[in-house]
Length: 189
Image 1 (cartoon, rainbow, N blue to C red):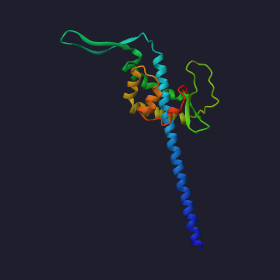
Image 2 (image 1 turned 30 degrees about the horizontal axis):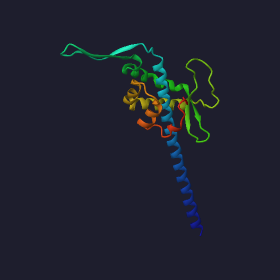
Image 3 (image 1 turned 180 degrees about the horizontal axis):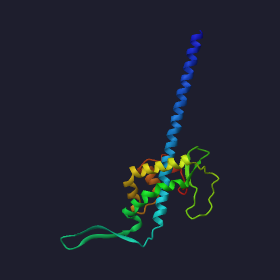
Image 4 (image 1 turned 180 degrees about the vertical axis):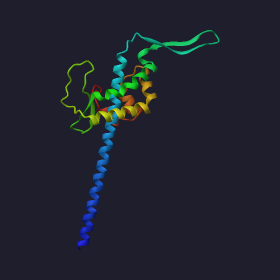
């Protein structure tokens, strides 16, 4: 009788441990998803801001500088801000700006989102709902670097042309980094 109770207790304890591990894994997976999604959305925000800072009148010549048999060249002018060279330069430093973000938790869904906590222009910002944590910013930076490394072509494709809703199109539809992005307001970042 005592052995049966001990075996039942051991089975119950084992079941509880397995349940705890599964829940922990699920929470960790969701947290990783939140970080990747937040990094993607912050990356898009930072790229859009950096592009907006380039003089729209500045143009760059692209195409082939070789002379065609008919004596013409295939050269065209495009805005410098959206040139591949400029976009590559921006992508080299965009992840450094993840240090300017803090973490916010949605009380109804318990999902994490990431908001800018340092102003680009020096004005005061409302930090009441954002937690500042160096582990979070380093995780965001690492996620951003991974996104740039794995999705460089997609990033250039989206930013080479003016496109609406880049956050949703790049982070949700093209890369599948955000499974819940359609529920995030567009002006969050």
